[in-house]
Length: 219
Image (cartoon, rainbow, N blue to C red; front, side, top):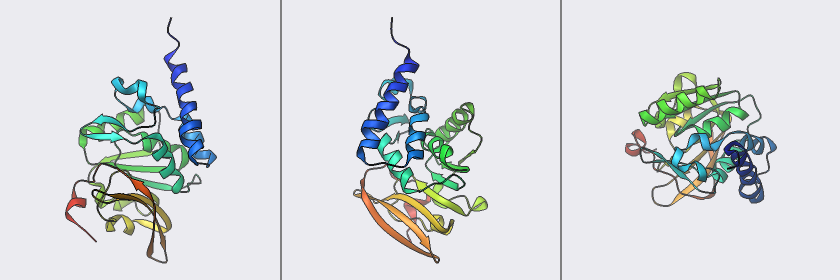
């Protein structure tokens, strides 16, 4: 008889947190707890569920991917969430990152430009019981001005420049984490202080490119 898949997934998730995330320097106990709680296998196609807790990105359809668990945890930790924040995510994908954020912040607003993915993510997140996530199908480059400003913004696709509309929607003292570049990308942490943007390169990364207005406009 095969062991319980649910038990298998729980054990794999525990191993993922210990060996891929904690061991590589992510320390925030709230982030580690969220990564342990959220079931990544629910956010990937059924044919990839056995690989859901491996240290790799996976296809989710429509030419898009779900980021590797370590990168999700690392980027989330950079946001320095304490629990009462309003967070904007650009690039909903399958909804995994939004679910992690929802465990750590008060409100999560997430935008997906690929309509089938946005609709699917919304249904999945609602089905999992998340009531503090709002999903919108639209162009993430433009942000969500009617519900701004945001305490934190995370972008899970790569523009070739820092999107000005998003820095405008960042609250004073707010943090943004974004991969920037075309062929060579750098993950940047941005902090807004006295109306000015302070940007720090954190590490090299590789994300799917941002589409929509982000392709056409530069600061």
